[in-house]
Each structure stands twice: as C-alpha cells, then as structure tokens.
Length: 267
Image 1 (cartoon, rainbow, N blue to C red):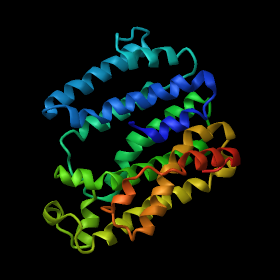
Image 2: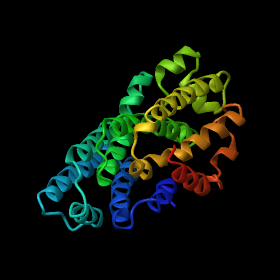
Image 3: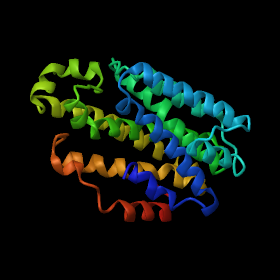
C-alpha cells in the first residue's frame, strides 16, 4: 500500500473530513509518482501542467473528469483550502523532475517545506486550524518527515543512481557519490546519515516547543510524523546504516503509537 502512514492518520479525522484528507494525499501521491512513471522529464512537465490547470479549474468550479480532481472539488464544499499550497507543491515537484542535486541542507529543507509542509498546511486548513503556532509546528514537522523520507528512500534511489543527500554533507565527510553508486555502504556514510538524522530530529524537537499552543483538533494533521520518529529510533539502533534490511520493515507499533499520541495530544 502506498502512503500507509497517512492512511492510518485518516482514521483520526472527523468522519465528514476523511475524504478531504484522502483526496489531498492522493493528489500528493499522484505528483510524487510522476518522476518514476514517465519516460522523460518533458512528459513529466506536461503532467505537472495538467495538474496546474486542474487545480485552477477545481477552484473555478469546473473540475476535470479526473477522480482526484473531483474529490478535491467536492472537498471545497466541506472546508476552505488554499490553491496557493497546491501550486507550491506542483511547482516544487516540477522543478525536481530532472533530479537536480541538493547542494546544501538548506536546499533540501526548502524542497521539504514546499512539498511536505504545504501538505500539512492544507490538512490544517481542512480542520479549520488557523494559528501561527500550528503553522510553525507543521513547517518543522514537514521538514522532519521530508528528511526522513530521503533517508528511507536512500537504498532504492542509489540503485537507480539518484543521489538526494545534500552535497555539502557528502563533501564534509569526504564521500564520493560514484563510490556509493558502485559499492553501496561506504566508509563515513554512517556519519553523514547521523548528521542528517540529527537535523530531522532537531526539527521534531522544535515542533514540540509549540505543542502546548497547538489545538487538539490539529493533531490528525501533525501525527503523520509518528512514523518518522519511530524510523529515527530504529536507525539509531542500527548505527545509522541506511542499508540495514530491517529498516525497510513496516513498524508494527505504528497504529498503536499513533492512536496513543492522539489520545495524549502530542507528537
């Protein structure tokens, strides 16, 4: 199943808003899969343009006959959503179809802000949460999830000769990209992974500083970070070896941990 973590989150949403949550996640999944389902970037850019036009028409009340667009159009009758966030996601995904390297951690964080964090802003809007504290928490949680997703996908991406670890971290630890493509686990890679995992964890800690001021109704949107927290703990257990096969296993504790965090109003 694609996006299992957020499928679990949907159960925490008010019943009348679950289709909104699933529609937003389906939109994201559709865009995320473009890179791997098209034969060249030009076709990918055409797909992205379709979605720009589709979002424009959804908000004009004239959605195309496409299932996800139809769900998003229906969602607008249940809650207020901003077209700005949809377009930021599309633009960022389109800009990365050619796999440009992230030259710095800041570049990676910008990418995650414009993709993962924007999704969380949409979810907060669907829940009628409009507070600066919730937005700040969502921004940092989005960056944490995005960085962890990069680490999770690392073995698969390397097998496709794609490198998303920031160049400044690779250079700092004297790691050759080609060496990773040829050999997989290389010396000092664990140090680079540790540094990136620490940045993700710092974002999670920063998000928690806003917890006391975040309304409980925002929790369903923010609890998608639960899986990332469990992954970071497991990664530490395996000495930051991203190629450890056990890291690819689905965390059996995730549904209970997500439910428990929801009951405790924490993330």
